[in-house]
Image (cartoon, rainbow, N blue to C red; front, side, top):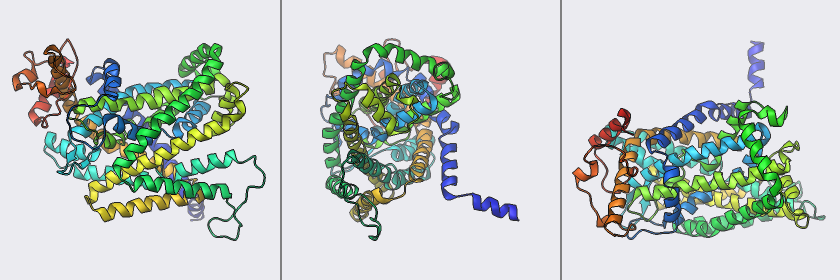
Length: 544
């Protein structure tokens, strides 16, 4: 009895949450997400390589016609607003410090495979979205889990869609969308003023705010107002702000990293060699500083997935709102989010950390990146490193706040419908969470957010993998139509100039992948169950 009581006393809430988080973001979820990426990459003949140039081309070119509430570029920026966040600065540093430089290699591998997953989930989001008479769009994993899987299997999976939506609401309101981001912003601002003498502190006797720097209080109030101005304006205002802010913040951060890389250009080749060698033999580079190969893989892959969110089901919600008639086209544009977030921005952060050796300093989190910037920038501006990084962190975290409000609202709308009162109440609750965020103890907040974020991936990937036959068939159809339109001298921004007959859509040989090109999507009415099964059967028979 005494032993049981001692055991009960030793188990804490934080400890239980941390244990669940460690298990969920251990090998089970990592293997699930990676396996889905490998499976989809193979089925789609590595669309992330073959069609990457076309994806960049479509990023800035709008289709003629099409329903939706924002342009393809705005949808991408809205997704990136929630994706590019503190993980690009803090997460990369954490992964490299724990797993050595090789963690960056595995982070890039996860992103490469994740691009195929992002393509599939965003394509499905556009295909199965609903558009009301007034042009209002609702789409995301909850839609293709319910409607797509019912169409294919004839079974009701709405319960699984609701589970996804509930997790999505929780992530936005209680975790990544609010508490953790506002804490990052206020901490960054406080860090900038840390060397300034005479900054007032709120008296201890004042409830809730007592002992807090006045800088934190003012920053929290200003940010709450700035977030409120955006989210109370709805999806169009969120997309407008994201389209303006995201390119600016990404370019600013990449430029600072490029200055560091060019300043230390002679060290770049050795850094790349260290990253590749350490990916398979961490001890060869780090000695006793880094862990085993398994540690390098786990940290790199987990942080990569967490950063770009491929497979988690968040980006499809933004993709569904794009003005398009062609789901495959938007899927191509949306997969660039993973490319930009991880293969560009996270790689830039990782290279600066490896080149400067900051990962061996014994520091943790954002302090590692600050040290890398301070040591890597030219001496004349190295003192400004903390300020530059804080500005980037503020922009990253702010856009994540408004992006996750959009995601959470969509999940709520799926459950309760277009009830204005419910949506308005949620927005005000979201602002309350932003306001109180700087003053909360967040020891368990990140872990709770991690858990909900990971739980979103399970129902989403079930839906994506189950509907992979639909993705393959539609992708094939799209590129076949695109090829025919080009041959006819038509406009690739309006494929309605060529409508295939059923016989042409299947092809004379019945091959899923024509030898001259690759899969494609119609954006036409949903494929029948028989057509989807034929497509899946052809792939399974080895015709891919």
